[in-house]
Image (tube, rainbow, N blue to C red; front, side):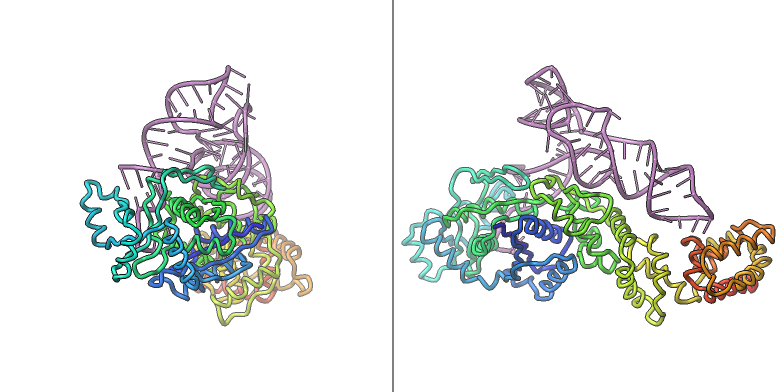
Length: 469
RNA sequence: GGCCCGUUCGUUCAGCGGUUAGGACGCCGGCCUCUCACGUCGGUAACACGGGUUCGAGUCCCGUACGGGCUACCA
């Protein structure tokens, strides 16, 4: 059975890249009927915090990524990892290195090209007896993995064949001088003990893979399958980072991005889904194929995320929209009543995110809004002063039960004809008075959704405003 | 510097030896119309370069260029 894992280190929020890695793993698990396990790589005690762990969990949950197992904490397995390194020491695939950091640094800098430094294997040849003796005597040491000669290669699930010459890989440290296990050791140990079948992670781990394969082999274990995902780039084609603005996935929640939109967006990077709408998670699972992922990196395109989000909002069931918009509205305007469904339904098509929708709902709840300056200056003030009292009178003559878009339109157009003016002369100012904006949905729908009383009140307010000013 | 990975419209995803190189986002224009959005119709725009292989190459191979990643007793 397929078993995959997402193994973040809790040293920061769940960022876009991590979220995508998690998502791909999740999709592959779902697609194959496998399991998705969550493992927190908290072995860096300096930088790991419980808050960050929680933040990552929250991020995943928000996206709708659920885990079948875990979260496991890598730090809990420390002693197992230590034992493993001693096992390697015993079978000769690892050895003690007594070089101090300073000494290593010195040797490195002594090189003509220090940047080409790799551990020189100085302690490789120390005999077992001498090694034991020095260790016993209390000398500090690290345990390093003995990388055998030859090639280390694997068939990457997404990239294809990748090959490293062992000479390029240094004898990496397995156990530090404080006896704490190193990342590569811990990862191998945990992946093995958890029965992980596919290690799907970011491309930035490619160079770790030969090291880990070497450890698997030293331990006499068959390595799992590896798949390395291309990174997500910023608009400048560099690895996405804080410099590019928001990278924490959860921050998009506050920007009004819906989890499903983000899910679609992330799933579509490097994969071909239906580009034109938001799919359900199930549909995405159906279309997903690990082997078909693109090998080259993608640029994070906020425009497309927005598009997807807008599509999602436009096509959602009304009650779902209300549930999203109501809290957002409450947050913006704590003391105002939330407008009814008619208003929500009317305004949703032009909103690309939730806060935007909430903002446009304001005129339905209150009438103290400002008028858009630009639209105001374009207004034919004289015409309004001349005609609006009559318009208000005309509209007020519509009986309450007949207050609907069709009737209102009939009345307004009839009135325009009576006065010998174009309907636009009434429509545009009405729009401004009703919403404060120069653009809105159909004015007649607006009248209807707002209700007779509120509509007329807003028209009066507008007229008074112009008369006063 | 070394090693590894990559390279189709501005962005994104198709294309898997024979296509007028397609779809989407963005942008521009038309339609709809009371405005904006939606929708719809149309337009813009790409195979990094050079060599091979082949009757034929975006598609296969090799170089070059460019981009990216890694190069810790971090993960």
